[in-house]
Length: 264
Image 1: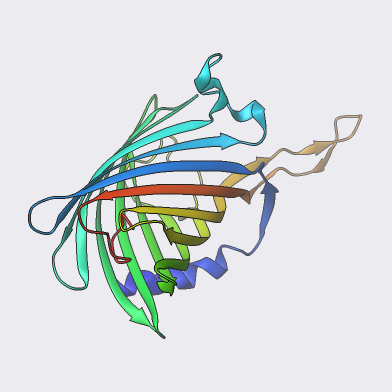
Image 2: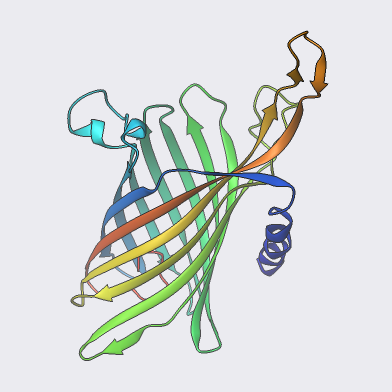
């Protein structure tokens, strides 16, 4: 796992070179999570996330009704198991509905927690197997790391944190066009958050995130009025940057999750 994160650190600066940027409208992502401790060291959890675009033209999940106010709705069911003081793993299944396509994810993950300069330092490797409506199935690796610190404030706790996530396309599940250019890093997320523990069971986490979709676009050739070629067409890298304002509300039945858990 250490080698994979080292590779990620090397790739990230290179991805910022020789590419154009496109700013997308700000999105709002509220999320509700319920988790319960099972016998032993297991945690079962369910998450329900809503994605709302500040540009109403993108909120097209349905043509009318309450769902017409959403861009996407995602429901997740997962299980996490603690293997040792530093290692956890589990499986998450997700269903995401949007105008097109609808998607189903099966995602095993392994998670390691440690410390760095007095901060907790969590690393995670997750693999998404994605089944999408009207498209070929594909897979991608999700590498993430987060730093933070749980701080006492009177009789409560707050936890500021920062995380970085990168999704890398795997070799299988290619589109029918084998010659289509694809970027190794499909999507990245840089997130700042602050978790406030209202009670031992209830936590609220507002956050701000910068999401970057990375892909290729075809720039068409340019011609003058007489039809003479002025400039050849070409393919270039494009980064679509979306600011996200999120709010997570999490409730736990049983013991309070630690910062090392994916459910915290």
